[in-house]
Image (cartoon, rainbow over all chains, first blue to last red; front, side, top):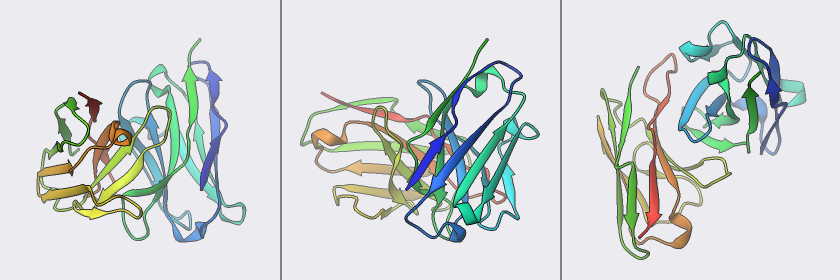
Length: 117
Length: 109
C-alpha cells in the first residue's frame, strides 16, 4: 500500500514537503508518480521518478518549483514543493506506475494541500 | 500535450442497464489507455489498461475497447456500487506526459 502525509495549509509563495510511505511490495522495482486533484476537479499527473532515482519527469506547470525524490532503504517517496500558488491547492496522491508500464495500479489515499493566505 | 475528452460529462442509467462511456484523444495513443473509477473521498482505482485488459479483481461486467483516438468503457449490467466518477488516461508519450480526461459522472436514473 501507499500512504501519503505532510499536507496542510501553506501561504502563497511558501514551501511544503509531502511524503509517501510504501509497503507490501518491492519498492525498488517501481517508478512512482505524484498525481493531484484540485477540489471538484479532475486528475493531473504531476511527475514521476524512476525506481533508482536516476530519472525524474514533471508536468510543465511545476517544473522548477517541485522536486520528487526517494529514499529506497526507507521505502519512501517525497515531493518538495516551493513557490506554491493557489492553483496548487489539491489532494496529492502518490501512485505506483505499473511494472514496466505507465498506468497507475496502486494509489494512496491522498493528502490535502491548501495554498491560501 | 495530448488532450483527452470524455463524454458525456454526466450519464444517468438505471441499475441493471448497460452504460457506455467514451474517451477521445487529440492524437493517436495506440492502445496506451487506462480507465479508473473514483468514488467520493476515495482514491482512483484502476479498472482497465491497454485499452481492453481488466485489472486484477475487476468484475467481468467492465470492458474496454478502442484504439488510436476513440475508446469506450462499457459496464454491462450496472450494480449500485458502480455509480461513481470514471476517468480515462493516456500514457503513450515518452518522456512521460500522462494526461487524464475530465471525467464522466455515472448517476443513478
